Length: 632
Image (cartoon, rainbow, N blue to C red; front, top):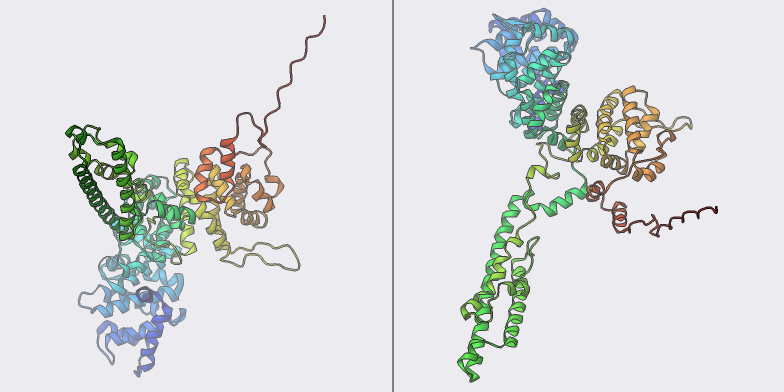
C-alpha cells in the first residue's frame, strides 16, 4: 500500500481521473476559459476560488498537447512559478501548481519542457525554484519537482537551457543530489529514482560534469543508497547513474574502497543453492546472530549439567570405595594405594556415566552437541589423571578436567566475517521477485566496466559473479518473443533493441570472467552454451555477437567442458586441439558449487593414481632395452 501511494503522484491517468471528477461536478461558466481561469489564479478573486481554478487548469493541462500549448501561450508557466515562489500562497495551491508544470512537460513534449525550464518567478529562474522545492518541499510537491527536472534533462533543447541557467556546472546542486540519493525514507523512493534519472541525463556526454559529480562524492552516495533502498525503481535509477559514472576510471577506486564490487555482485541475484546450504549449515552462527546467542546459552547449560553429573559420579564412587574399605580389614598402607583392578573398574564406571549423562543432558535441552564438539573420553581423562600415589582429593577432581578442557572443542565453526559470506546479501534490495531483470542487468553493466581490470575481475569472480550472470542471461532472452518457427525454417532469435542493450552488458561481463578456468566451467555447466550459440548465429549486432563469440571461445578451451559443448552442438570453428585442464586447486573450488559433478571422482582418481600409471590405472610399459652394439 505504501509503494502504491508513493507512485500515485507520477501517474497522469490517476491525476486526471481525480481532476475529471471535479471538472464534471463543477457548474461554473468559465471552467473551459483558460484566460479567465488564469486571471482568477493571479488575482485570487472572481467567480471561483484560486484552488478551484487551479484544479480546472490541471484538468486541462492533462487533456493533450493542444491544451498544453494553449496554457503555455497564455502564461501558465510563469503564473505557476509565481504561486510556488510566493510565501503567502497556501501549500495545497503550490502543490497543484507543481502538478500543472509536470502535466505540461508530460503532455506538451520537448517544446513544453523548454518553455517550463525558461520560466521565471520574479528574480528567480525556473531551475532555482525547482531545486528549492527539491531541497525544502515534502510529499507530492517534492516528487513533482524531481519529475519535472528529469523530463527537462532528458530533452536536448531543454537540457541545454537548464545547464545554461546552472552556468554549465552542477555547483551546489551536487550536494543536494547526493543527499537525495542517499536518503532512506520509504516515501522518498520515487524522488530518488527521478533525481537519479535527471543526473544521469545531465552527465551523459559531459566529461566535465561527470568528473564534478565524482569529486562531489556521488559514488559514495549511490553505494549508500544501494545498501538502504528496498524498492526496485530507485535501485535501478541508482545503478544506471553509477554505470554512467564508472565510464571514468577515476570512479573505480572510490567504488572498490567502499566494498562496491561485492555489492554489485549481490545485486545480480543469489548465489547457487549448494553454496547457500553449505554456508547456512557451517556459518549459521554468523548469519543468524539470534540463533547463535540461543546456542551459546544452551551450550553453557549443557556444560553446567555435565559438570554437576561428573561431580555426583565422583562423589558416588568415593562413597562406594569407603564402604568397601570398612568391610575389608587391611593395613593402612594397603588402603592408601587401591589395587589396579579397582581403579580400572571405577574409571570404566565414570566413563559410562559420563557418556550417558551427556546424552541425557542433550535430550533434555533438545539440542545436539555443538559442531566440532567431542564427547570427553577416558583417554582424555587419563592424560589428566593423578599418579597412583596421589591423594584422594586430587583423584576426586580428576573427572572434571576432561569436561572443562573440552570447552575449546565445543565452539562453533571458525569465526568468519559476515561480509565475506556469499549467502549474506549486502544490498538493501532482497533477492527474489522484488528485483527486476533490468535492475540486475544494470549491475552487470557496472561489472562489465570494472572487469577490464584484472584485480576487479578476480574480486567479482570470487563472489561467484559468473554463476549469477548465467541465469540472468536466460531471463533477458525470455523478456521478448525469443525464437519463432516461420515457414518451416530453422528456429531463430528475435531481440528487441532494449534486449540487445541488456544482453551486451551481461555477455560483456561474462567475456572477461571467462578468462579464468573455474568460470569457464561454471558458464558451461550452468547451461549458457545454447543461448550463446543462438546469439552468435542469429544476431547482427556487432558488439553483442562479438561478446558471445569470445565467451564461446574461452569455454571451449577447457577439456572438462568437452562433452557439454558437444551436446550443445558447438560450431566446429570453436573446437580446440589441445585444451586446458583444471588443476587440483580449481577442482576443489568447484566441488562445493557442483557436488554432483564428476570432478570429485576425477580428483580422487588422480590422487590415488600410482606414479607412472596410465589413465586406465595400469602400469606403464617398460622402456625398450637399448640396442646391442654392432659386431665389429
